[in-house]
Amino acid sequence: MKIIYITHDGLTDHIGQSQILPYIVDTSLEHDFWVISVEKNINDVKMLRETFSHNKNIHWTPIRYPSSSIFGFFLESIKMIYTSVKIVINNKVDIIHCRCYPGIFIGVVVKILTFFVGTRLLFDIRDFWLDSRIDTRKNKFIYRFLKLFEKFIYRISDGYVILTENAKKHIQTKYGVSENGKKSITVIPCCADFEHFNPNRIKDSDKSDLRNKLNLNNNDFVLGYLGSLGPDYLINEMLDVFYIIKSLKNNSVFLMVTNTVEYARKKIQEDPRFTNDDFRIICSDRSMVPSYISLFNLSLVFIRPAFSKSGCSPTKVAELLSMNVPVLANEGVGDLNSLLSMPKNSSTVISLPIDEHEIKSFIEFIDRNSEKAFIRNNSKDLTLQNGARLYLRAYNSLYD
Image 1: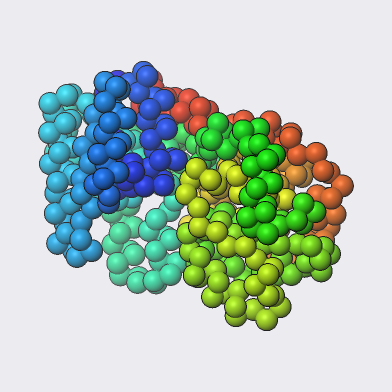
Image 2: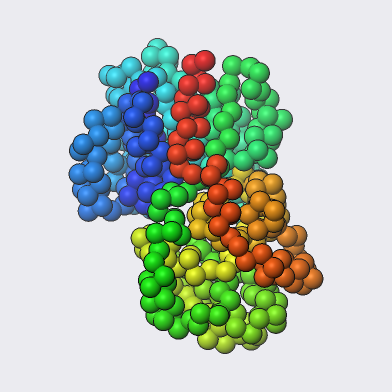
């Protein structure tokens, strides 16, 4: 098949490197790809072009990231539409694969302009973007207008990729999408590179050096956090959990690996229960992230629950489980309630507000079950290879 992949996420960005490029490379073994992406760093684009030079099945057209003005965004959209239309017509493309809502806005226009080609439209839904905006802005007029357009998007799309079973149920009931009809729905959670996030690749000597660098003792209980921080990531609730753990284990340290270091420091300084010695806050490039994760005894994944989060699948969950790290998460986020369980992966989901007894019981469980190697083995459905296999199924289903 010939597939055009349209995304506003750059292939050179973190999301592009972890959640877009690996799938395209794997599935390009069977299909031809034309990729249209929006890129911020021209130097990174040049480096990535060299890696594509040996792959004849991937044709990449990067669009320079626009200015923040409305005119800049409009100009970028026109460029993406023009380039995509030309590719679809000249190559008689079979599938227009659109990632996220910004991508589908472009894809819908391209499908309409190239209707005579007969190309199928695949909507890759990463979250309920419009509802995530209204969760914070509450602009009812704009929301209603965009929801009407959203209905049109679901109607014109020929198939869907979605992150969670909960989200699948929603679009089936809300938009009447049925797998028994002509449209396909494929659930593909965010997966991880199990080769990159592999605890067996990290030497004991390297872990020891990293502990020394962070001033951690061998017997310290390291509570971990991976990823960005902000209002949606419930740092106050995470600090409450840490306070309970610290009451059980005086040797507890909270290690945060985040690109929002200043935000973390500010929130910690506002909490009188802690000192700076209780925390290690690190900004790391992707190559070192597995090494930091290898120090975690337990990791938190807290996200503000909202309707829009029912379609959310945090990539960090797959990365943590692949490193044999138990996860403590909160309810109301995607399929985490069914994904995380103590028998399967020594992980659990708790309700909010924080219940001290619930936290203490889980920590006792962690202490009793020190063997963690089975966590990775029980999470093989979250490998990139499995994700690529499911994308191939989604492509094929459009022509079944």
